[in-house]
Image (cartoon, rainbow, N blue to C red; front, top):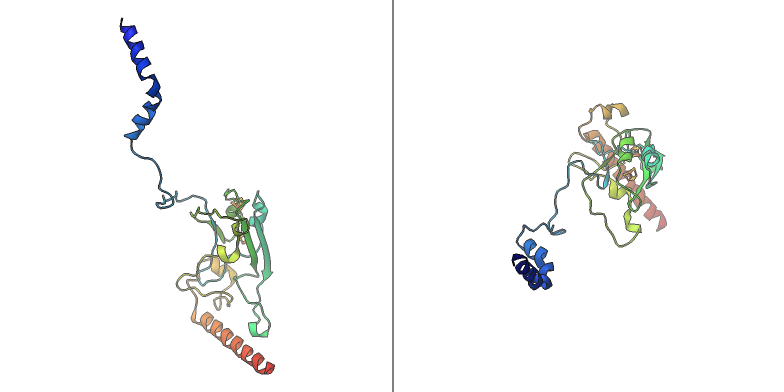
Length: 211
Ligand code: SF4
Ligand code: SF4
């Protein structure tokens, strides 16, 4: 008799039995993430977009050695190094961008290839390359996912001076890694001002010659 009753109830509720899960879920706590309006912070060691770091005076840490590119299993990095040049810009020099002999003249990361494994940052001998927590890297076309050096370079912080400019006076490259540089000095600022003034004079002279 009891089994007949159970069978009758099952038959009665059969057409709406599938809603059981729906009804039971309706009263549970919502787990939907309201992205992109609300962004959840990542774990501190999350591997996101890369960054090319600077020394405290603004010079770049990258020495153009290409070790990151060789370490990359996805062939996502392109580096072309060049020599730093202390010849004044007005005399045809190309400038100094890092404390050592070489700097990364061209630097690109192709985010269509990158798998965010972090092998490149492990290979970097100067800690020039690190990974940030930024993960919003989607785009509508392929070209915009190849990040260039100007996009990857860390912004200038207080006390930094935009390269090219000379190293801190009296210091060697190794001193930069021994923490002896805390910011751009007056002599570095004066050198940049002098370069700018010389460049302006050079431009004015060229305009006069044209007239
Ligand atoms: S995170 Fe991995 S895949 Fe991406 S650029 Fe670095 S080494 Fe290559
Ligand atoms: S980011 Fe590091 S490993 Fe890559 S070229 Fe620059 S210094 Fe070398």
